[in-house]
Amino acid sequence: MIHYPDIIKMHGPPIRYWCMRYEAFHNIVKRKAQLNCNFTNISKSIAHHLQSVFCANMQSDDGFKKHRVEVGPNLFVLSSLNAVEKFPLVESFVKPNHPVLFPPWVLVNGWMYRTNSAIVLKKSFETISGYPEFGKIQKIVVQNDEVAFIVSHFNSLFDKHFHAFELHEENPPLHALFLLNNIPDCEPLSIVTSYKWNGISYVNPRHIV
Image (cartoon, rainbow, N blue to C red; front, side, top):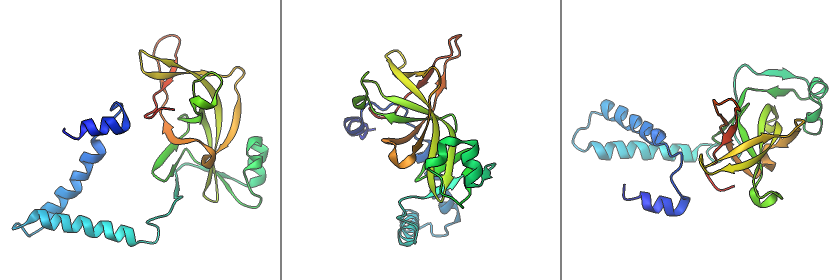
């Protein structure tokens, strides 16, 4: 626990911290300990194994790929012409004679983007209101490992009680196409909707936006 003060100084209050991924890594160590027959210095054997795996990953051809894209199942594929006909917003994005994918989720550099999740379109210092603008992902568009989102636009207000941003959709709804490379903050955000009658939606970014 002594490292927590340093983490708070570097990253702010520990909001939405989750240690499950760190704890899950222990399963790899425990499995290796069960299969290892050297009980004289088991810690050294496990450390040597983990470092060997790390070195193998470092030396692999795709170890330093900057743009790795993995698409989810149950996607539907359209030709470029049909994609533009069905979704006119993608006309500036798609290239002719290449299929266009519309997956339910896409994994890019470890970030998983899903439909109905949120992304930051403009940060607080870029808007007149002083609050960030968010977009709700309606469709994910992938072509030749390039990713774009059809999003609906949301303005926001900060709710001090929930320490989260309250979302307000444009009326009438405003849809636009955003390329993943042009998004200022690439972290996908979960949208939480209140169970009250008003059904207000909130997002809680990990960092200051």
